[in-house]
Length: 329
Figure 1 (cartoon, rainbow, N blue to C red):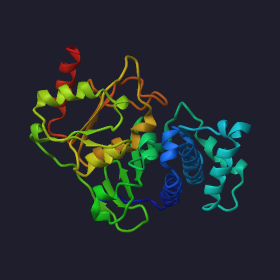
Figure 2 (cartoon, helix red, strand yellow; figure 1 turned 180 degrees about the vertical axis):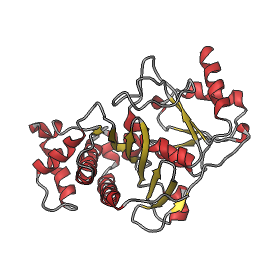
Figure 3 (cartoon, one colour; figure 1 turned 45 degrees about the vertical axis):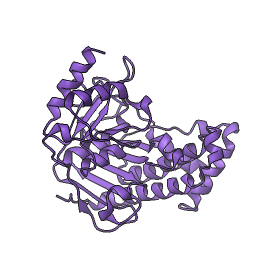
């Protein structure tokens, strides 16, 4: 089912597309020299620019709604970061020619809420820093929640076209509305196509979707889970909430984000949009203990450990196996 999109949301979708164009422009400047120096300035420029463009549109369309986002403008105001500030403004001014730095700083700081509210938005302006720097997968992730339930998810994946060729574009925009389904379209605009999880019922034939970076999940733990489930298919590896996109359209069947250290809790902006995209595509999401993700505790998933995402039919079997393997670690 392709969800209906209220007219009030159209400027927000356009802002997400603008943010994707800005990020694509910045990503093209990442060179081998930048990677060798471990210089994260390109992703910093894109992070701030993406957040400014999206939150400006959210605040204009929904002026009463709090926003929880990752960045704040304080770092950009420091003298030692003037080069980042200038570069960000050059990128933004190609899209918003009249914007001043004070305008942009105020847009960024729309996301300084940390408590949420009865209804609020959460944004990750660039999810997947390592993927962005490698020229691979990253995401712009925007979710809207009411009374702790994700009601809307917008997931922009600028390098995802090869995984969903039906959209015929290098970038893909997913939009999910609670109870109405999820659809994808080219980031440049055009017709929506419905997406669905694989619905695979034999867990031994499932494909894992895993992070490229082992620090984002415990790969040895997931490897033992795969062995116990009899899974031999090669994993799909990508950074960011692009993994949720892959699950939602059947390119993979299981995504495990297992805790890498005691006490670690996930940030809500790393999951909100992806969760509703998968759920509205027919999949299931829980934490490693099988509990629903609790988005009522501010900017962290304080009541949850890790995340398990699946195409649905064998979700409980995965949860049981994860718990069993953990006991023997």
